[in-house]
Amino acid sequence: MRRVARGDKRAFDELYRRTAPWLEVRLRRRCTDPDVIADVIQETYLAVWRAAGSFGGGDHKGTAVGWLWTIAAHRLVDAFRRRARQAQMPAVHPADTVVPAAEDEVMAARVGQELEHALAVLPPEMRAVLRATVLDGFSVRETSVLLGVPENTVKSRVRRARIALREALS
Image (cartoon, rainbow, N blue to C red; front, top):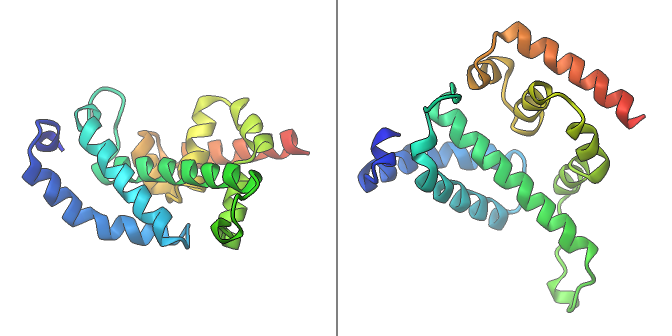
């Protein structure tokens, strides 16, 4: 990652070669649209190229792969949000109408306005563990490494966050 941050294109190519297949598999578990996946992968690696210098500095304690997945997961959520907004707009031509997969509709509903508001009132540390475990699909161990907190802390924050969300959404 340090070499990528210095603008080393070979290092970036190697990073891409090693991680893109893995990233695509993870994204396919969350989205059935190959065009969305291709866009997310492209946006992710563009962001990595531009921000590689910020990896490893200061407050980021996770792995390069964890950082890469976090970027990709956020790009995927952004794509679902765009798709949800587009679905609300009337289609100009019936042939242009995109019918999202059921999984995509569930994800779009997950990041709906009510949930976003409920998430916004959670303390930042609870939002971070929910984002990592629910939206990004990380295990407790991966979340622990990514956030730099003990596994039991991750578990208790997830539990408290889910209780708080349940109350906020009821």
